[in-house]
Image (cartoon, rainbow, N blue to C red; front, top):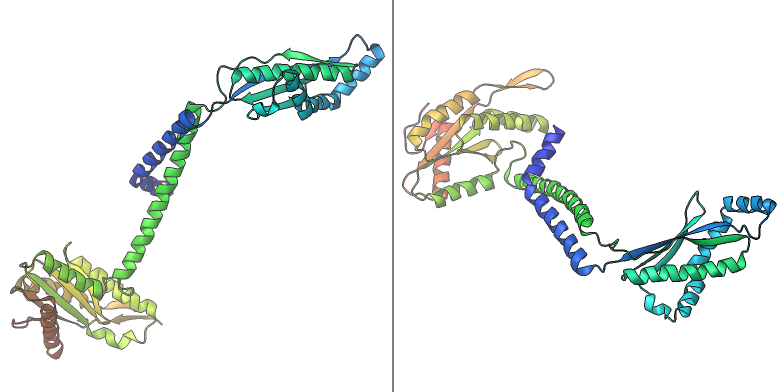
Length: 370
């Protein structure tokens, strides 16, 4: 159920997911092709080994043990990273170090190997390769002059890179697509949650809490809308009075009052058509609006409602007992262009006639029907 619930959310918000993915991909491509400066990396590799010319067999063993401790390799890597070494190498090249501020230089000792990786990154692949080889050679000469028991030499010289390492438009676009899809899914779920929250607030503004029928303010607004939309249309408006609930209303717990009123709402909706409207008119009254229905035609429907509501409602409060609703119904139809207030007044008059007589149903201006 949970999976189907979220699939429905994604189905409703598919356009958000598509838009989010397209925007992310397009932003990525624009950034890659028009904003980002391509950066290239040139890599040189150095190998460190004992100096066979200055080391006898006993010293050879000590030198190998020193290399195993990684201290020599780490020291050489730090020398290659030294700003002083880099600046001195550039001075020998008759270059100004500030001209290469965009270039990043780093040396890394590879684990489990006597090899140092020397990387130069920058916007010009030829300059990057030149700096890696030139600074690397200067560092080799400097180190070999200090440590005569070890040699450091090029294992691989840097070559000019043909492809930038950033940006990579296709790879970046793929990641952007995935990111856009995730954002789109999040937006779709968030939109559905916000929409549901707004719907709940909207329902609170138009529904009566006890009965879950429309409240009176919204019910009257619907009557006015019906008349405005179809000024010459015939409509019937009825009021149902729950005479038998009066004695229980103030004594029963609110939970049971809600149960009674919601059962009545469900029963009324069951008897009505799709465009008919049920509303809570007052504490003990419900309103019924029957669009495109004359009063004479509505009599049978109100009789069915009366018969249905005459069935007692069973409650379990300190044992089972039944509540008789003892309904009274008054209604009027609008055939002569009467205003909303006149139509309501006529229905209320018909209800008064029904309440004061033995007749349970009364139609305004027509002989009461029982």
